[in-house]
Length: 227
Ligand code: GRF
Image (cartoon, rainbow, N blue to C red; front, top):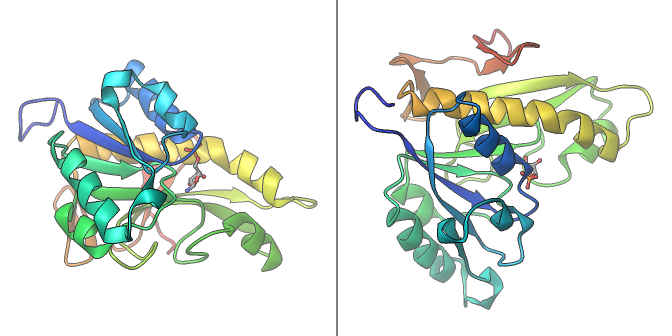
């Protein structure tokens, strides 16, 4: 329950693919670790496997490629999402760039998970780029969404070591469970009303967060000392 609203926080989830992050959210709700209600799952791809993870009544999808431009699709998506009155909108493997109007419409309640240690490797092919750079560490970030791609304030990160012989696939596979824990732990903060964004900075419990929280080995978010 969110203390300021007195009801279960309403969560809309945007997806494009298999939906393992969505499943992690559903599982965390079922286990009682995330006190929230999923009010809709929205996709730019009607064939996204993620949609099958929730009841038909919660699913919304339209083929984005059939719209004349980004703004036209975003407008109809925004109307559908807004109709569910979400407290938070979470992009869980939503692979389509959200335009300015959509982002502004959900300002301060729109979060994304990105598979890199932002600000490193915005965009695609993050695992391969981390390996190509010879990084010894890789990870995932949950951040507020702003119009510039993957550039919003980072709330929390999970880190894993890069191992000798890692491939983009092995790195992605090892990161995924950490990403899931990161997502559910961050959403738990959001659902509890502890998270906000003001002036491009994350606020936790009303205090500015100067570096992202980090996920410890027990799955708890701790204050971060590294950027
Ligand atoms: C995740 O790694 C997410 O960070 C990235 O796409 C992947 C989606 O996975 N943007 P899933 O659809 O949640 O399984």
